[in-house]
Image (cartoon, rainbow, N blue to C red):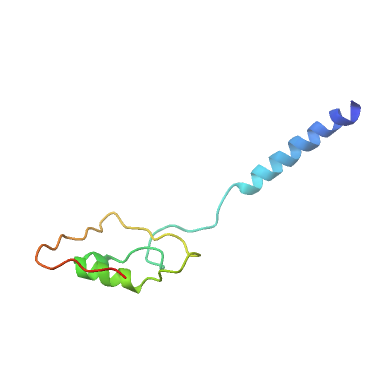
Length: 86
């Protein structure tokens, strides 16, 4: 019973150190286009957006998700036929 009583502070210290190691990050998310956000030029038209999408790799499963800026709005294109994405 005494050995279990001595193990509790060690377990608490281990948990505290483990949680302290999870905090903080050195990632800088101050904006800018570093390849992780959709460029503003892709929002110029529906064709520009489809053109940008076609440059992305369909098999890339290791990179981070793309960030869509708040100001990006692709205007609707009512005159053209829909484009098929491959």
